[in-house]
Image (cartoon, rainbow, N blue to C red; front, side, top):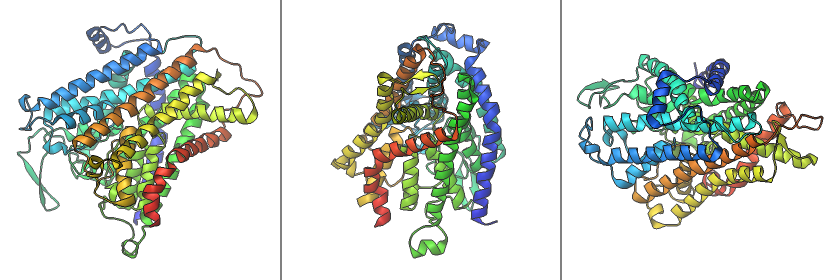
Length: 553
C-alpha cells in the first residue's frame, strides 16, 4: 500500500473511532458533572482539603479556587526540581536550574508541557512521576472544570452559582482521566511502549543501536500526556522515539487519545444545555476545521518545493520516516489543533507551507478540537462572537441559547479573543528586538522569525510543541516563555469564568420567529468563517513576515 492510500486509511480509521466514542464518552462526562452523589474516595479528598462539596461557588470564588490550586502546583513542582538531588529516585540527577525550574513548573501547571531540556538527562523518576505526571492529570482537569463552569452559565438561569471548582477538578481526575489513562496505558504496553522503572542500567539493541531503558514509566506518562492533551516527552526525540512510538498503530492510537475527549465534550455541552443539536453544531465546526487542516498539511508536505524534494516524493528530513509522510502530517496537525505538543517530526524541517499551517492551527486558539476543556470554552466564546455579528447584520439584540449578549458579555468575549494574541505578538516582538532573544535563533530572516513566533505561539496557546531550531533553554527564553504560558492560560480562564457568571445570572429569553437558529448548517458555516476571519485579522501580518515570506522566497 502506498503512503497516500495508507494516509487516507489512517484518517478514515481515526474518524470512525472518534465518531464511535463521541456519544458514549460525551454522555458519560455529562453524567459525571451533573451527578449529585460523591464517592467515598472523593469525600476523603474534600475532607483533606477542607471543602464542603455541597457548597457551590460564585464565579469570583470559583476563579480564586482555580488560581490557588494552580499557584500551589507551581510552587510544589518548582520546589521538587530545585531539591531533586536530595530526593529518592533522583537517578543521580542534579538540581534543575532556577530559570528552567520556573519554566517547567509553569509549563506543566498550565497544561502546556513545553520542555527546554531532555527529560532523560534532567529529571529523576520521582520528579517525573510525583511532579510532571501528576500535573498532566490535574492541569487537564482544570481545563475541563472551567469548560463545565461556562456550560453551566448557559444552562442555568437567575443564579450566581457555577458549581464547585474542587468537586469538578476531583471528578475530572478520578472519574474520567484516571480510568481512561489506565486503559490507554495497557493498550500502549501491549503495543510495545516501555513500562519500566530501571535507572538506565539495562540496555537493549534496537535497529542496530544500543538504547538504555528509561528511568520512568514511559507508557503511563505517554498515555496521560496524550489523553490530557499534554506535550512533553521523556526522550529528547519525543513521540518519534521507538520506546514511545514503536509502531504505526500506536502512533495513530496516540492521535486518537489526543482528540477523543475534546471531540466528545461538545456532546457533553449539548446534554447539559438540554439541546443535543447545539453540541452537534459545535462538533461539526470542529470536524470541518480539523479535516481542512489535515488535508492542507498533508498536501503541503507532499508537494515540497525544489527538485531534490520532489524527486524524493516529499520533504522527509526530520520526519517520522518509519511510518510515512501522511502519518507525520496527521500527527503534526492533531498535536497543534489540540494543546498536546507531542511531536513525531521536527516542524522546523517541514516545508514553509507545512510549518505555517501547524502554526495557524495553534493561532486558531486550538479550538478544532483544542485542548481538554480549553478547546470547548474557546469555541463557545467564538460562537458568542458569531451570534453577535449575525445580530448586527439583521438589527436584532444577539442571543445565544436564550441568553442576551449585551455590552458586558461582548466586552469579556472581545478581551478573550485579544488576550492570547497580545501575549504571543508582544513576546515575539521583544524576543526579536533584543540581543538575548536573537542569540537563540538558529535560522536567519523569515525562518528565524518563524522559530521565535512558533515558540511564543506554542507557549501563549499552551500547546507545548517546539518548532526546533531555537535554543530556548536560556534564562531569557525560560523566563519569557514561562510568563507567556501563565498569562496565556489564566487571563482567558478569568474572562471565561466572568462570562459564565454573567450568563448564569440572566433569565432565559423565549425563542421567537426572529431568533437566530444556532444548530443549523448556516450557523455552522458562520462560526467557521468567524474563526478564520478573527485569526486572519490578528496574525496575518506576522505570518506574512515569517512562513509566507519564506515560502515565496
